Length: 371
Length: 194
Picture 1 (cartoon, chains in turn blue, red):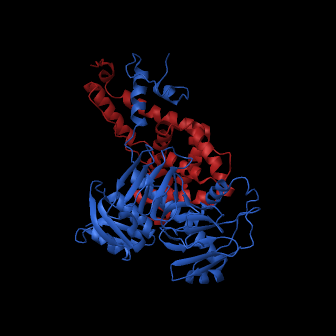
Picture 2 (picture 1 turned 45 degrees about the vertical axis):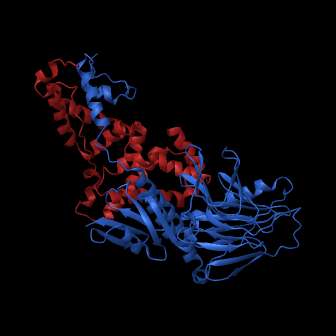
Picture 3 (picture 1 turned 180 degrees about the vertical axis):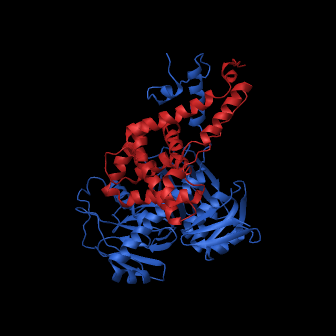
């Protein structure tokens, strides 16, 4: 037994988790101590927020890459696309329509989900439909597919609104939907005879045309909503820790999607249902401040909103990374109203005192530095 | 852990974006910890990790399915960091880059449970670790902190497995010899733990 430290440690069979610092054997003892030191150097760690930020930037760069490709390969189309909204037509046909309608809607939505990460302009994928631009931001959507019987095939459209943009859409039944940044709505080109069904990823405000014969059903990752004619806001971002629905008028029936289990709820105007993803708790409260719906008017109302939440919202709305070179105070919260028509630098100027902080804007990100 | 990464790697190449995210979540800490040993510039390290994952996505269809995921990620990050530092053209002599920049702070916490003699010995060990060559530090870091196999470490550092073993062996031997030059009494005094 004349093993030296180097023999012990360089042996791949040496049990690194079961070292013996109390060994009587000098070399073994020294080996254990040495291992303890080299195993645990001073390590540099990223906090959760920094990790999320890098990930966000990766996704953004991935979508930028897509844009660059478009630019070089199809220069001629790009100049048009820059002026108007880019439209790519595609279609999805389900021959087994009679099997189950719901699953094909969800399938379609899942299939188009990647567009959220890769598209930088509002995009509609659909078949046989006309799209009109009402003003610069409203899209009038009408399915022309009138001959379509519905028994053999079912076609869907998907509206993708990238980060940094918002859009309004009017469906064929007259329902109006405001889509928030980074959201996606999938819907049939023509509603079936007994119901109107759509799938939402992200956040949208719905103003549903009243029709007692054809309930309107919004499906999302964790919640399904059934209404006759109401106005409500649904937030179902994949990256957020909770999903919420806020009812402004009318009445809605809230059930869980197949991903969740909670009891059916009837919501009344002025109430908000919040589903925490981590503990599957559904809480219902009143929300008289209309915090959630002001985004449709390009306003952000804050009521004791914690700084990290606020920054997350701004990053989404402006599609710009916000980087602080100091540790932010997570307990700090804000109340008031921000006008999102202002530039991000201006908005950050309200949050960070310009006398104490410098705000630097470079491509795709903003850096806040302490003076 | 490794099995997970391999599964995510396969799914990622097959087009699964959740697997992409899992790859990131599982490896970000290790990669950052490794990368930051090359440069004190934390933004540079973050940028390189960012570039690495963007590249993975861009070349997704062309990636090999059967790779050692851990080694592949470490190796790619290492290359990114070298080329980043080169581009920045700082005062570091570029041709000597690989030999000169890997530096670990081996600042072990020497806490109460050691006797005075051991404390002396261990703080001496700390000093000796600091003067190991960059390659020696890196090999020890990858082998013992990142707990990679000799094969993985060799792949990352672009050396043969035999060289890698020798490098580890000699580094530890060097430390051991230095330790034995500390007055013998330090080693022979018994340690009483409370």
